[in-house]
Image (cartoon, rainbow, N blue to C red; front, side):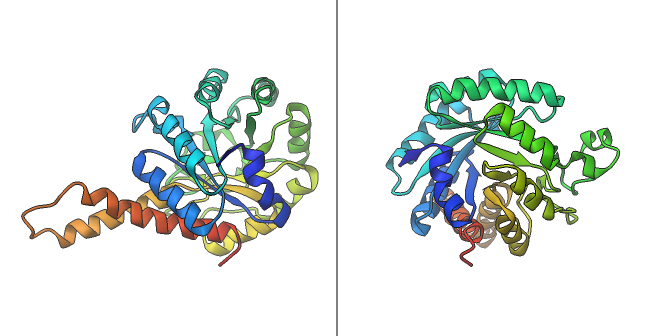
Length: 291
């Protein structure tokens, strides 16, 4: 069932849990996510991020995501993740995406407000929901305070975190449907534990009425995820460790088959799908506070 972001988040908002958002980079990830959603009977968000365009273009995978969403037995939102421009958001909307994220968090505050407001105006006119980001979520393999050239732009790591009062002003001025906040998570594989300010979520929640979003959550403990959810996060982006699970499963299977003369390619995607599905199911249930 194809829905927008507000619709897929509604049950979580009412009952106090977070909905999982998974990026789709090929048919195999798409199949794994939908199977996980249907087996857990939970709605999910299918995301496409421009950073994955070298793997597959939005023009190819977008229609596939929409077709799977329409035929799913659970609510599925098809969402543009980290859209970097108005044009990119419009492209996704024209393809049929039911939600878009405009990420102008790297711009100064007023420009972020202006660009986000424009996307909201256009998207809401056609019943498409909008997520935006406030603060800075680092792209790093080694934690929030290292490994990211943008980290040097901040005198203290806390300067990159989302300010509750600014979040309130931002939501009121832009009309966004969901807000991605920065409280210490980072995109990528963690080699050292990030420094999380989980209480900041509570402070922002007290000021902001729209659902809060966690980016860069892969690699956190079950306890950290669930504290974030209990503190007010209602959407969690998760991709890195799901696809890593698929890769590890394929590697293990190929290691076992090393002495065999024949390896059929059609067996390889099935191994990855099964592993990614199980990892996605675990994420869905963890975010739903069911484990």
